[in-house]
Length: 391
Image (cartoon, rainbow, N blue to C red; front, side, top):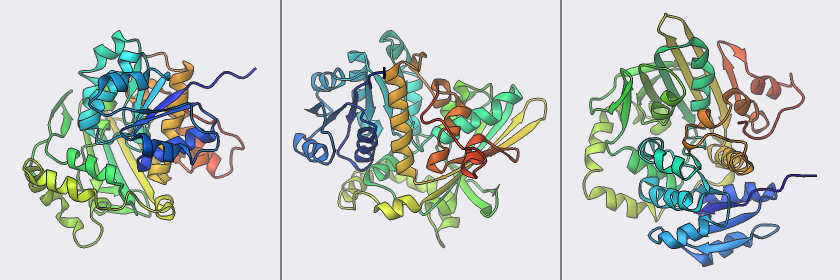
């Protein structure tokens, strides 16, 4: 006898990523409730699904009663409505008040820190779990940090570096970027979170072939906040190749431009840019979305001097996000996750098994040159893989 599927409430179901998440969950026959600001737009999304939805709920972000009513229709709330600096608190609190678990697609470091910090007690009191950043930002990196760093024991340092090729941002991602680049980012030094600072970074990272050595800039990555939740680590540095942000001749200028951009985004210019984004395309075409390739490099250095290096690679940032969000929602709704409060991905789910389960999506990883099961399966060395995240 099959176990009934948990009902999942998707808030922000009409956006680019929201529609991908809804389509992925519908393909798994998960009962859905679509929620957002416009009932008309929600009905248009529902009309694209093969089996329809359980309910459509119009719930403006400033209407707590409507948000709680929407959240109460399911056991898990998926928030796809960024930027989360503006929407996260309202949706999270509505989920907690309704007794529903929460998961989101955020790439905003500050919001992740707030979920894991200031909202943790509220979530525990409600006996629910909230896992922010369960998409490409920052599931693969956080899991790899655990796989690489946990066996070494106490860590002196953890270095995380990103390289992305062919990435086209959605309007939602661009709005989140405004929140990420306005100077509120933090770093993890000497066992504590501290303001990120404003000095330009002059550094490079040797990525695995064929990428090679690349100039990098500071990156307000989620792992800075999430990795200390499951690793004993003293310092974490997060970097991103400058060509990931500004391909071409502008790439070398990125480290120097970042402090200037942060100051400008604390002026009325931020609002003007936000309004201009609305006139841009919703997101990349499907062929361009699928063509994206990304690499995350993690190096852990132990207090005793030992070290370990891991690499995870994959395609299709937004498609991967839809996959991992859907996996997480099903796991949370089924009771597979027993921890409560604000959780990093590697706190909620087994790191290695969750990476292994993404092999069929094209995600591969290796540690110290040894392929993980995901890499081996993709190469044809294994015939079966489990689907979904593992608690």
